[in-house]
Length: 271
Length: 138
Image (tube, rainbow over all chains, first blue to last red; front, side, top):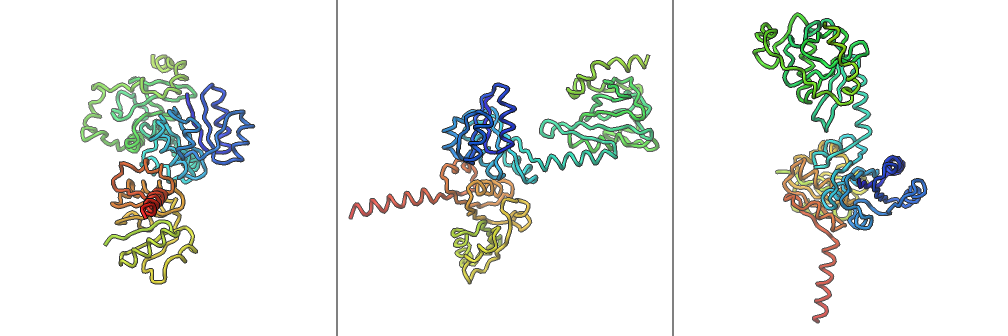
């Protein structure tokens, strides 16, 4: 892979070192003379001195057709210009723009950059997900916010608790990817009964995540129709109806790997 | 009437703001350094505002979103580029004028019909060659 690393000081050094070992073609451009010297000695690599947003520096450093272009300059707008230059004029396949001001993440994306990273933004997201631990819900967004994985601990008061998956009419816009129970992972099928203290790992789209949580958190006395008016009626007849099997295929890869070893546990219990 | 915003109160920005104010337009000039407003003339009738132009939220707060036209004259080309795109694409301002020192940046604003870019470098060069051919003829 051809990787262009533009700007940055210690971040650049770290990235250079971690990519250098993997036999990639690295092109390093840095606007700061002192940093250029330091990187040369620290990383034993050719470093071009120049502004990574100027056409001249790109041409001199031969930064054409990069597979990944990483902009690590101090100023957000410098990174913006560098990424645009790389993308529009030098045919970079993917640009990664690091920003300082977290609100620039959304703005830069709106302006057409494909990956924008802010450490403050990530920190805030982490803090939010950690602090929502008390509600026992964790969410993880994948693939540029197009998929959300929600982790949810089931309490005994929930309506879906102590019911088999085939009987609960789980919403169509989501699927249960895995269940953690007693340190074991269960890949669910329709016969699995959801028990208190189970942790459900559910996959859905970001705009449905709120609905999904609402559905899961519905308490026993007042189960609400889900996915339309047919919900209540359907609930009564749901046991006879075909239930869309929770899609095994959609499981989060990482979890699925660990799950393989324990996949038989539920069926054994059941029989 | 929609307001006219000038971002960057340097020599060019302040002189544009003075000129627009003389034409009785409703002008707001923005700079992050209050002392730069000293460049505005005494009869400047617009409003100078201190704001950090790298922060779009701050610009939105002082109403740049609803501008009729924006002149971008910061001293930093990359900042100008970002502001031009943000004003044209995110704020959807119908007329965005921007000054770039580096003429190669022009390619990055091409295809965006509401951005008009000016390059003093090219203007000076063309003017000088015109003057030169003029004096040759004499």
